[in-house]
Image: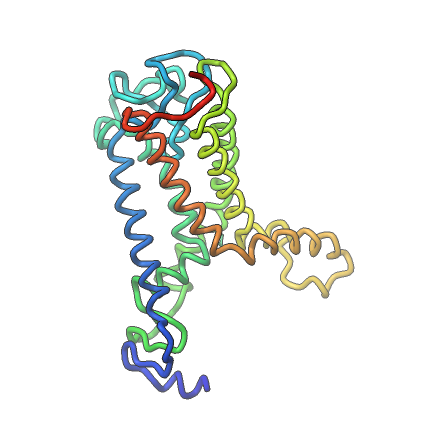
Length: 280
Ligand code: FES
């Protein structure tokens, strides 16, 4: 069978009769939509925070995950936290070249590099964007001298390092989720609290199901049966496997939810919608 498939070299030629193109098409539309929205949202530099009152110094409020943590904040922008909430204070002059005085540009590289090099997403966009091949048993764009991820795509190995940053972000976003249950220091619950709570839960389910994380937690072993002391490592590996088996679904759910979280905070911050909550 593999012999037969290997001989069918023509682009998009296949013996498959199912609608194999639906998967790659949905991936294409889904990722393009996310890239378009996240670029637009990062460009704004405004309306990524809400706490019900302007420039309150009390803790709490809704912060869009696209902007968390805000490293610097530019005074005078709409819908942003007080400058005291910025990790490093007021917007420095040397960052004049960043569009929209947006702190999102300073942090997006971390989650994006993690997603971009994710084993699942690689499969998805190699198929949907590069057609190499577009699906199993379907002819892809012919490649000469393919070197896989030992040549041109060597940078994909950055994934194992990006993972550490992704884990740090889970803690940061969990902190934001806790802060979303406070407004001006007063405890309460709003729709935004729930939205921002679900966000790190889904991101955690995605991040802790990562293949690199499973390798790490499994003691970086390639063979469990080769060592008598591998029992505990194998148990840990099996726990992560529960999430790893669902990696694709959590990849999409977390991606969509992080986008919806930004949309929600943005619309509340702009006054387009009203947050239902216990504070008012
Ligand atoms: S393999 Fe997907 S996040 Fe690591």
